[in-house]
Length: 305
Image (cartoon, rainbow, N blue to C red):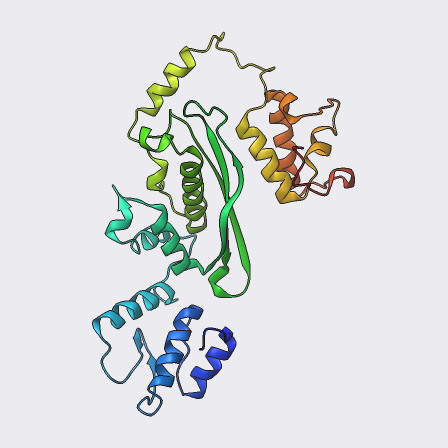
């Protein structure tokens, strides 16, 4: 009944009933409080907030107390350290349940819950771009760019976080290699969430039991090479993903951008790895404030076609 009301309207109802508005409380918490107040309209007298919530004059149940403690503990400005302080990482980690940690590393589902608890509701979440495995007969590399949008601190202002993750048989346990895109998506989401939370640890899904260093070294040995950096090697999938992500972010036409120099390309796969490095450097300069030429503006989502 009250879920359709705005946060402002919910706060107004609380104030009309002489109820202090919880600082930093989410909309769903306000809805629950208003519904409880209206259902106990005759018995409800007042609500006070001191260091913790005393929602009703009567003693709350154990379950209600646990919910109240979690909301207060997460949003009490006095107890909440700055996101840029040394205490922030420990503060965030303290909010994970034991079943949301594997050897001290949070799983993606736990990151999602804690992120909404501390940063605000997630209003959009999902893969923004997917580069699927190309070999249908065997496990192959897949790359996913994942996007998470927050209603930052439930203020109505949105903040966007994106991350990239890839999966191949050398960095992923065999059980998950059979689902490279789904696994890469979960990894990328975990990376985006821990970026938003400013966590210093890896997500559990980013880890593998394999000896990754040894696998990579053995893979390199199987490729004929002089040991020198191959200037004329083709652009990598990671470089393509980065170029596309930055162009999308800066509203740049990908094909116009890669053709703005001396080289002319009908397909981005014709770009060399060395030239891709130079292009990425230019994109970073644009992101840092360098003026973007009008001739390369206007990102096109179907530029690959």
